[in-house]
Amino acid sequence: MSRRRSKAEQRPDGPPWRVTMHDVIFESDTPAGWVFDVGLLLAILTSVTVVAVETIPSVAERNWLILGRFEWFLTVLFTIEYGARLACAKHPLRYAVSFWGVIDLLSVLPTYVGFFFVESDANSFVILRSIRLLRAFRVLKLWRMMDDAEELSQAIWKARHKIIVFLIVVLVAVTISGTLMYFVENVIPRMTRGESPLDDSEFVASQFDSIPQAMYWAIVTMTTVGYGDIVPKTTIGKFISATLILLGYSLIIVPSGFVTAELTSKKSSEPALETKCPRCATAEHHDDAVYCYRCGERLAAEG
Image (cartoon, rainbow, N blue to C red):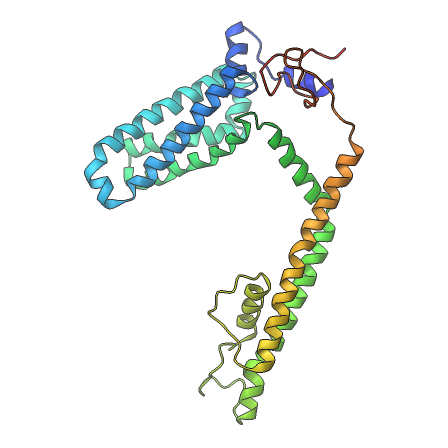
């Protein structure tokens, strides 16, 4: 009940139109809010596409006028949206200096700056609008994904000590394998030929010319990326490489296991939510939900 009350407290005071506008702009539970978020998402995608197309010289030269008008139309649209958010926010100044408020402002500033100052340099910053694509998590009834993302981040934070130990083990393995490959592929062959391992004046056939280079190869090999720019030539080096690849496959599942264990323990300790919609009888709403995620009906407040 406390979380639902805190969500209701986010609504602004004053005329009813501010409350209605707030529910439409800042919430996606209602049908009007869903339509607004979908329209905003399409506008953001269109804006990013227009800016990307403007970087293609052949297209920009032929359609610069259309692209420019499109960009100004979207800029005016985003300016109106930014003003509406400030108008219906309970604390306009607090929203203006918040993360999303700054992103909303930066999404419209570049075009104005480009018009009054230097257009070629400012247009690239319009790509900041792509950050606002994160709002897509509130669209199409996927608002619960934001809660899942929060649960995932909490699980990672709780498992941070195990993950740090795991990364240290990987770093040790990379250091040992990189050093070993340097000696196997570079030092031992040169010493066999009677060359100095540290003399750069002599011809070096091996690609493992330093320990950092060999550690880079070990990281690429252990992560199973395998660019192929550095490959072992000796039999022992190939054996070490195969062992490192198998070790990399086995290490992939370790950090995911830590996070999965934390998520499982959190789920098992949480009680099931049985709030039902009075209209469609859909159950298992989140405890801070105000509207039904399926039909948009307002949920009955718990006593």
